[in-house]
Each structure stands twice: as structure tokens, then as C-alpha cells.
Length: 107
Image (cartoon, rainbow, N blue to C red; front, top):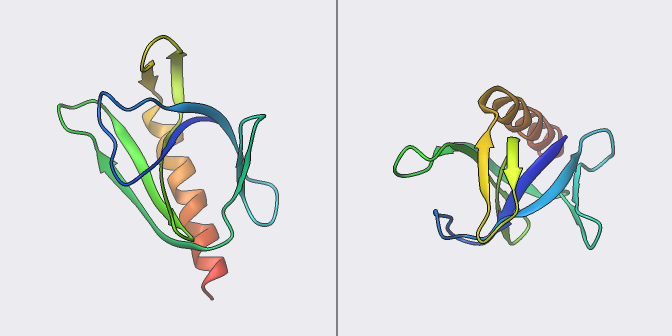
């Protein structure tokens, strides 16, 4: 599933995001962007957040020591800080997959 993501404590309209792929059919799940592969093997927290100003819905997850914000874009233009139109329903689906992975890891 194609995603845009940011690793950091906060996210806002000025945050530069990266394009990547959420690989959901591996154990553990991972985020890959060609340069790096982030294993999601210690998921401790998954929740949905609404960005201020009605900018969209994102999934916030904590895996190990990293806080990752991600969403599934319908359209992403990689100019400046980037411009994305978020696919709300696929973002919700990604969050549910990540939550199920968290439950599996913590059981």
C-alpha cells in the first residue's frame, strides 16, 4: 500500500513527508522507500489523528523509539513540503491493519 510518512514527535503543514510503501504481507510489517526499510516489530501504540486546520486524517504509531505519522494519499505532489490529497478510507484501513499487527505482537 503506497503511503506518505514522517518520523518525528510532531507533524504539521510545514513538515516534509516521504513517499513509501507499507508492506503488510510480511512478518513484521514494514515501511520501505527504496533507501530504507523500517521494521514495525515493536508497535506499542496506534491511533488516528486529525491534523489541525482540517488538513486530513493520519495514523500515529509508536514502534520501538520511533513515532511515525502516515496516511494513504490519493494524489501526492512532491514539490516543496509536498501536497497530498488523502484517501480517508484507505488510511483507516491501514490503521486497522497496524492495530491488528500491534495486537498480535502484544498477545
